[in-house]
Image (cartoon, rainbow, N blue to C red):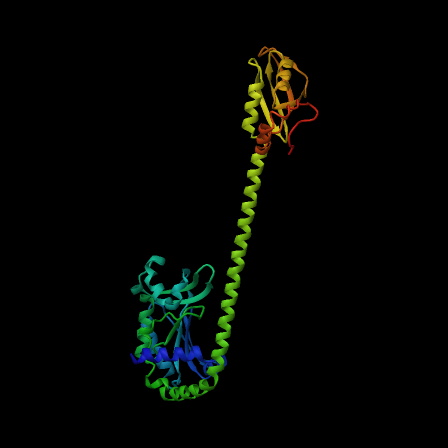
Length: 378
């Protein structure tokens, strides 16, 4: 319980402290970095921004338990006093994959990943160590992308046990990217061990609290301003998205109205074909039919092609009927082949029909002219 309270208290201080103070504290830390690369283990002392290679030793992945004794022998003469021990494992030990989670899981990211681990990977939580790193947050989509690093316990536990026996149990086990700690908190060494220089760290924490007392009010105001600015940016993005959706809806409604108007005033092809069929003589039939603009073109066979031309011209739906190619007799079917075109008489709108019905007794309808068709032309 004391250890959990200690980690919580340090996390709260880190959230409240300015970045410049955190960077300064980081420069005062001394870490022992154990980095495995191929068949070698490099032991590096990291003092702030300085790195000093202490030793290199062979590493056999098949016998990791022997590494602790070799490391103890190499550092026995001049053991370094460090704040923490970091183990960086090779890339081929780690399985990395990207996950997409609901944004609500951001508050307890590790617990959310652990709950869904057996569905997202071929392993259960008791078979692996894993680390989680936040990569991208999509506030509009309501999800968060994280990077998951997995290491099998059977690969790592013998090495951890060997290092703990000689007093170099790692506080962190880093993935090759160096950004996620694979070691769970329950496996981390006690931070109050004598070699952690706890007394000096507590004294430094007291100094940090004094500095925070001066920096905290201004820093909290700045953080509040940044949060408000983020809220404004998100609200503006949502408003722009709503605006875009409204414009798209207006465009769809305009296109729908245009299609309805076009369907209302332009004749349907099926209706034109039906009227053409009614106008044809009984002994005629069509083999081609095309409609473009207000002109219809047909090709077919009849006993007498001139009769077809007269029948179409007499139809109330068509005018200006004309042959567009010479009439030719076809001995195979025993009929004349014809190709002719005609202009379609435009349909009356609903208002014009009602008006003609009301005024039918007052005015006689005008005869149709082949040269000047009645009605609105589109």
